[in-house]
View 1 (cartoon, rainbow over the protein chains, first blue to last red):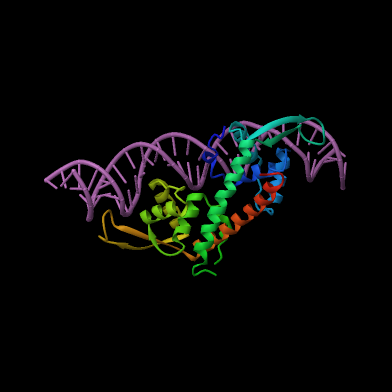
View 2 (tube, helix red, strand yellow; view 1 turned 90 degrees about the horizontal axis):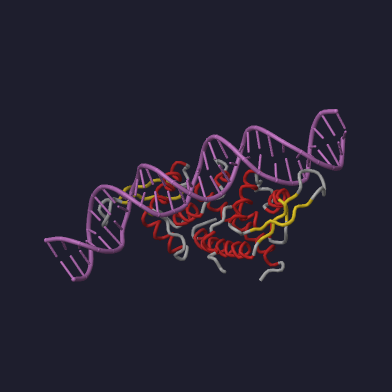
Length: 115
Length: 115
DNA sequence: TCAGTATATATCGTTATATGACATATAATA
DNA sequence: TATTATATGTCATATAACGATATATACTGA
């Protein structure tokens, strides 16, 4: 059941943002791309190769799941929707705990003699 | 002078901890290994291959520099000491800013409807 | 005395992941 | 009607981590 979510850490930056983008609810690939860009203040611009290979991997790892396909709702190919699994959410939460730990130590060490 | 320190981000977890380990002052490789393990609450255990290839890369990137070699101060081969360069410190500081941004967004998105 | 452990360095082959370049298709807009 | 934004995907390459392996030294306990 709990399936050792620690084994998926650390997440890479693209993977972290993809999962975080899905945290509020389902999205399709292209929407994730734009959301990650906004979410990171314009800093992280996923290429399509990074995005779709990451989505494939996350599906295989069952950190996300495929939902229904939406037909003709606008321009472009049919949208494929993805959502976080419970496991995916737990991994994302564990990652934030990891980040907190790193940040805590960094603050301690960079103050000493720092700016 | 400022040499675009953003280009070195994101740091990988091992690289981040190696630089952070050097933040308070110079250390030799093996000391970094032990320090990183302690610093991360036992979670991050650098293999020697990760450590020494990372040190080589960081030297090449001039994020760290080599100091004097210490002879016969104890068991093992002679110790080689490393220290952060100004550039290395700036990269480490920039990385903590990046981590802060990720954590801020993660907190916002994981609260909504989360545990 | 001598075997084991901790200290200290380093390389090699494999694997995982990101990334730029390329490819395809659709609808809206100028 | 040409361009742009939307939307999907693959391929080759580069980077970095990591387990395995190797070498050398000093201390410690049986």
